[in-house]
Length: 395
Image (cartoon, rainbow, N blue to C red; front, side, top):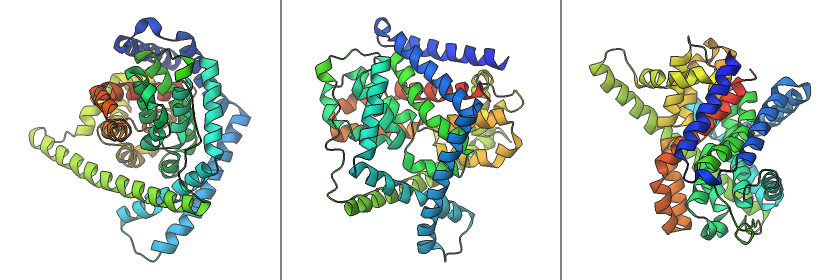
């Protein structure tokens, strides 16, 4: 029954995306089918084979070791501070972003990451028929944040029409930054966070390719990684990576303060009119039908839907903090589905981040992003649902 519901959910997602499509005649159904098959095979391999489980464990162990190294740095600076519970989250989770951002910056300066991303993106482009720029951006978005991923293709922005701009923006919103993955791994089960990374890449491309299909001439489809880093030495790369990581940590902390406080305010207003009711419960009831199709048991679907809805209207960290409180009471399937759904940047605040980044690259194209901002959020949310549904089929 769960498998039938999952298949129905995938069909429904494709149907919604098809209705939203800008150009139904040019949808690359072959490429979409290949990417969906890649998602199914990846999830099956990771969860149903011994080698796949060994790979997940090895990657998880590597991240845990990096977290240990990062914790040493954090403890040296703030280890003597007696913290409240909220302070522990900032020191033990958010400040680790600084170390992960430093590593990414160094790997970028050494051209290790850009080279891997270029050739993996090229392979995806060759297999699926998608343009190289969009494929490169999708892989790049696994490692870098929304702004950094878009900045990496800024030299190609003059070639991007509205549909191509939609696809690269959807990939940026539908994925997460590797610098933040370390924080996620301390809040959610590692196996679901790690499998969400490749699944979200494919999901974003699948849904965006239906909503905004493209055909690109070869002369307008070129990826250049020569200028991916402006650092002049490895030490400058470390310093700039650390500064960028610190900025991200502070931004996330500021957003958490604003969103959690605002959520409490909204709930207080709602309870003045409807005693005992919260925004999370309202969102839970709204998203219940989708949750059931994703494979969440009916006894847990309202609570799980509330957490997913919280992520959409605030951000993934707020939702993860709520999820941590109830995760131990939920079934493994619900934990898997919700964890994968939460592992993306698909929320309202991302629209502003992406529009602001594009504004800095090409002011004329920023208006186009603002114009399809809501459509972008819907598409990225559908992508998160697709990834979570695929995982639900194998748990």
